[in-house]
Image 1 (spheres, rainbow, N blue to C red):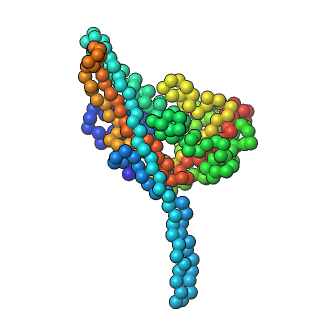
Image 2 (image 1 turned 90 degrees about the vertical axis):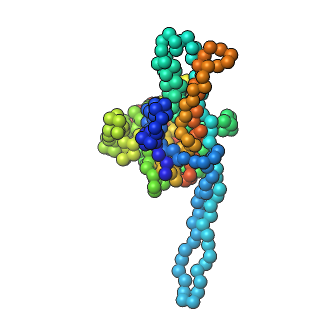
Image 3 (image 1 turned 120 degrees about the horizontal axis):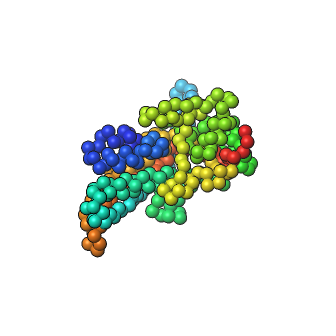
Length: 302
């Protein structure tokens, strides 16, 4: 059973790993999404395509043979992380906390970069990264794909009926549904749904306020580690995603969890090297575990 990073932290005994997981799970996405532990370099699974037929039969007659159809899929683990080099003189003059700060900053960059990859990762352009939701559910397929719904023929104010349609397109049996959107889309949703009373504010386990629409928590994704907007680079034309997180739905995958290693002093320079690494990826086990609502103009009046 996959565990979120917050739950996994409770089972860790390594102080360095606890510190890394704490920083990684500081965002709404990685504090919520479960990670399924896999052996080897990836996950191989079967996705159900169709069910076998059933029916009735007469006495002394047999049932018609039919079988469920499945298709084999695979998701590879990707090598994700970075090296931190700190001049030995800085550590000696300012203390070990100067090195610890650089490690924390690197892990924060990993968290923001993962959020970006979760949406915009594309192995066709960069083979070393995993595919994000925008690649798995391309906007151009709206109308031809059951999991891609167009908010309107062109970018327009949010249609709550279409949002409900996207929510209904997601299978949540064994998982829980969430809405993933930008901050501008969240403000637009709040303005659109406030009159109907479908918007509510709850408290997370960390005490933060979290918006919910129709009982679905809203997970906000803002900017990546390079300060580039992830979902609303164009606020007038963006997408909202509905996801169902679960072991057999949409899940992260990993082998061993985030790791930190002290590589000591480099041979070519007086710097201390630390490596942070995470063998991770994203797997859509159930083809109906995610839906995309396109053509949302978060700047339109409601």
